[in-house]
Amino acid sequence: MLHSSHTRHRGGVWRPELLLGMAILGAVSACNPPAEDASPRTYVYKQVADLEIRADVYNGGDGPIRPVAVWIHGGALIMGRRESVPPRLRDQLLQAGFAVVSIDYRLAPETKLPAILEDVEDAFDWIRNQGPALFRADPERVVVLGSSAGGYLTLATGYRVEPRPLALVSFWGYGDLIGPWYSTPSPHERHHRVVMTREEALGQVSGPPISNASDRPGNGGAFYQHCRQHGIWPREVSGWDPHNEAERFAPYMPALNVTPDYPPTLLVHGTVDTDVPYEQSVLMQQQLLKHGVRHELMTFEGAEHGLGGALATALAQAHSAAVNFVQVRAVR
Image (cartoon, rainbow, N blue to C red):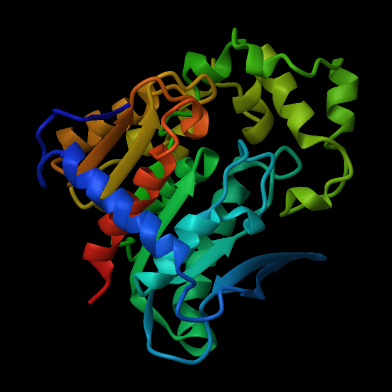
């Protein structure tokens, strides 16, 4: 069941009846094909040694100048790929007038956290510098959406990317990297489905740097499970000890870097998420409130990671609310 946040903030509170209306409209529009071909054009936005890092652009090419919606995939910074942009969300963004850019970035542990954020920052530089000529992008109208670790990276763009995006949407993301949820062993069954020795786990990620999980010979998901079983994810993705070197993580933690000029933000989360705790979005909400940043917290009671276990309409509601949130800030 959807539950609206009752905490007042600049911009008001969520009204469930309006969200239901948006979900119905979104579901109807999602049944109609986009006005233009939704197949992507793929570009290399960055090259590091022999590794090409790519972005897929939807609805690019000829036509009017468009605002840009950047999608950042999840996967604990270890897994994931640009091709996983949710089709319903993508199509609704296209129908709302956006060009949609879904990016890859180098993955951990082969690449560490600072370089991962550098890739994300460079993707935005590429969009602003090359996007107008390549796919009719408006470099002044950029919004960002992402889920899970992509939600984390989305929140990081709110203070690491200049000029700042016009709006952010974090689906079950996080602003803290070193709390007990990530730096101590997980008690949740979902993180104990694959058990490997340390040597076996490292063997899954022992190859050269990659920027798309489909290019890794080993099983990145099994390595992630190993990290959560032993509470070592922060160390494995950064190379730093979260217990003795916490200060090194600070520049990479959105919850520590909110300021009054942080972009308007929509947070979407389920209350029983056992992969990224709901409290992570509450923590971000507290910081946004503290600094007077326009925001919404869209809460789904009883929903797991990715809104699993919620009503069948939950994801449609979340996507429609996200499109509405960014559209009013970026589409003229």
